[in-house]
Image (tube, rainbow, N blue to C red; front, side):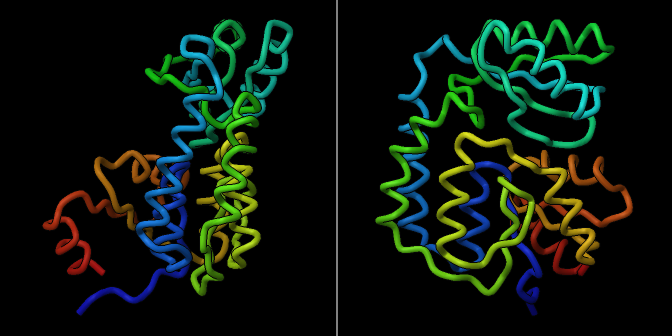
Length: 230
């Protein structure tokens, strides 16, 4: 006996395409094609070495936003991933990211530089998003019955035109992950199942709200264990 359909689906950044696939809004071939093109356009948008990303820890979202605002005098830097209320990833031009880190540390925060070649989810990606938009318009995407919680606004969407628009915006907008999790909890969700390697999102969800049940499916045995538990 398997599980019933989920009440909601959500994915972090690239994982939003997997969530849409689970909700039967897109088929596997089209999803794979889109994710390939998304990565290609993003890689081409900013010369290698110009951009960077860093995780800021132990600071509130408001403080991280303040650090980014103060660092904008030297270049583009913006919150990229609102992973939890104590883990915000920033993204932008290398010099501005380094300045934001300096400011964040002076506020009592900690920082970890990320090994990435693309400054994702910031305004430097608008060119990539515009190139990607045409491909999105040509891709068959269906209305869905299972609500998809979008990274862009942490709200549920089921109409194909809204999903397309959000996938376009997602490339240059912040991933509002902790807000998405909080939205689902507010809607009555008390159990989350993360499907994929490692358990990064499971840890984040537990950090966001330790009252909910969280399962991670990495291997076949994990799936069997989840079925037994649920």
